[in-house]
Structure formats: structure tokens, C-alpha cells
Length: 139
Image 1 (cartoon, rainbow, N blue to C red):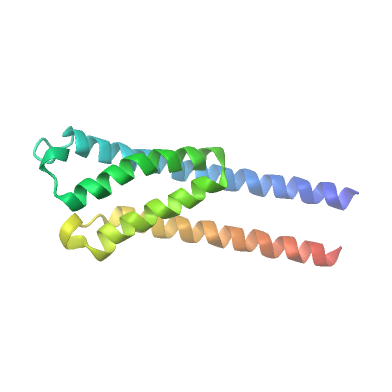
Image 2: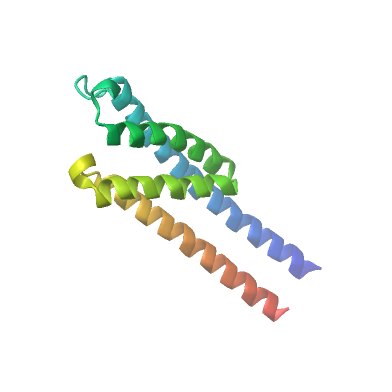
């Protein structure tokens, strides 16, 4: 019985660290979202507003101003759908800034952030699952 309670304690500690990581990512997504909102409303630059944007920018920016805060909320709560939306946001921004930099410009900070954090997240999940399998094999 003690081994099981020890596992629960370690699993809870790992889950707490993972939730903390997801909450940090959530805060960064909110900052990115605020940047898109500022751009759409003309606060950031009065010459770049929704009514003056190209069609590609209108589609991408409106998608991101909706998806990023929702993904941020999901990540903050630690829900699985938050991770799915976060990966969707990363895919949209990766396509925008990585594949079509001529249309959307370069935003290497977003690309590096998403690549690094998603890689870290999947590596952490892999390590936790490997440790769990090792622990179950030892029992």
C-alpha cells in the first residue's frame, strides 16, 4: 500500500510541475493574444488595422485572437483540450511565420517559443510515461 501512496505523491508532484509549466505557457499566449488584439484595433500601429489588412492577415489574425485566449484558458486549467488548441495555435503561427514569411513577416520569437515549449512538453510526457512503466514493471 505504501508503494502506491508513494507513487501517487510523486505523480502528484510531477503533475503540479507540468501544470505550472502549462500555466506559464498560458500567460505567454495571453501576451501574444493581446498583441494581436492591439494590431486588429489599431492600438499598436494606427496604419495596421483590421480594415487595412490583407485577406490573409484578416483570416489569420481573427482566428488567433479567438483561439489564443481559449487555449490559454484550457492550459491554465490543465485540460487536455487546452493542449490541443495550443498545438493548433502553434501550427497556425508556424505556417504564417515559417512557411509564408513573405506574406506575414517574420516573428521568430513565436516560432522559437512554440517549438521549444511543445518539444519540452512532449519530452516531459515521454519521461513521465517511461518512469511510470518502469515503476509498474518493478512492482
